[in-house]
Length: 132
Image 1 (cartoon, rainbow, N blue to C red):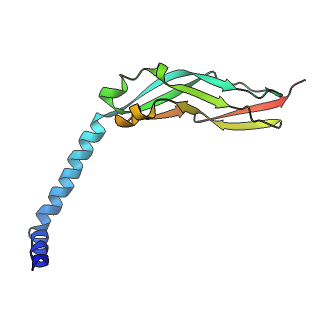
Image 2 (image 1 turned 135 degrees about the horizontal axis):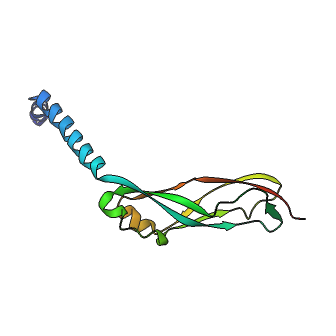
Image 3 (image 1 turned 180 degrees about the vertical axis):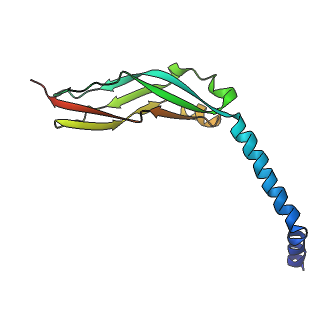
């Protein structure tokens, strides 16, 4: 009996209910994406090099960080609170080495505001040769 009442409530005017759900999702999406924006800042890149090898190619000294989130919050972020590092200290042979850019920041603060950080480039390639 209870199951029949629930089925009746769900199925009565089902077309109107589906249209209402679709409209609600559209309105939510509009406001969500309307308030999201991105900001690009350039920060210094800390580089850790291997002791026995030297770089043959250029090593970037800065990296762009894309800050994506609520447009009211992303401009309040101080770029000095974000550190970027590339670590080539584990290189053991000559040739091209690739490593990811590691971003260090207070993840709790950024996750509470639903803010994402992305480094550009995310990976760095450097050619190394044995020191003379």
